[in-house]
Figure 1 (tube, rainbow, N blue to C red):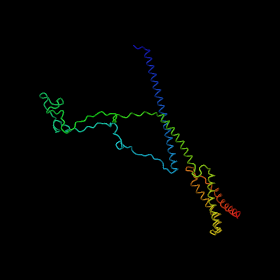
Figure 2: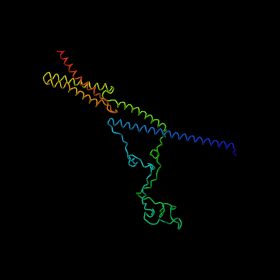
Figure 3: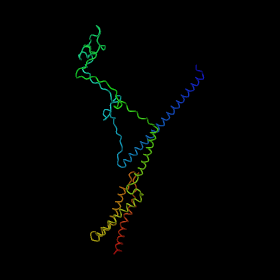
Figure 4: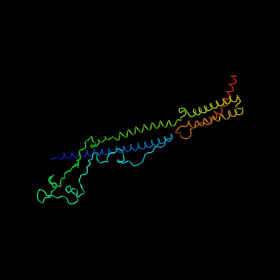
Length: 310
């Protein structure tokens, strides 16, 4: 017979197990809360990343991404889909029994309507039924198979090779590991997104240069093209194709204005980043000064060089 000490030890053991179970349940609940919080945080990060990617796509001319909507296709409409759930692939099919009629007919009367066949059994007055021996004349318990008729095929056990055995269940994944992988991928996506934004803030024309240096170079190049056109007009004026008034008008106003507007348009087309807040500066005053001073100075330098060479 158990003593009081044994009952007390058993009670203490049960109390310890109960406390351990409560601590385990609390730890599991806390772990679930942490997992839900981490999943919500990642969801917000992924949503923000998706919106930022849509903005980047719109900046380069790609429309925003859209999620396809619609009901999921049923297994019967999916090509190559198996039978519905709950029905095995190797479910046996039973062929129709020859001679079987509607309910209420028996095989003994050849499928004709009426009462079931009642023959004479082993003893007088005993009905002939399943106890009747097969093959006896007049007994309809087991009909004979006629010529040209097929026997009823019994279902056979499905082999593992035939697909009757279900596939093994996949191993359960750890949510903590999956969330950690998702967080790493999100960090990698943020890093690539920042690099993309830095590249998008650089123009296609001279991307490594400062805006001032880029503007000065563009305006100076356009002014150089205007100076080349000016020299061509001077040579044409020497042979009498262009008069002096037209040459002076083009040197003082026409070619500098064309050079300035050409540089302005080039900076607006290729000197503007894909993503920039507002309008980037094109340094209009600096470009005007360069173009309207470079062409006349080039003309004077060309005249001095021509006189020195003579």
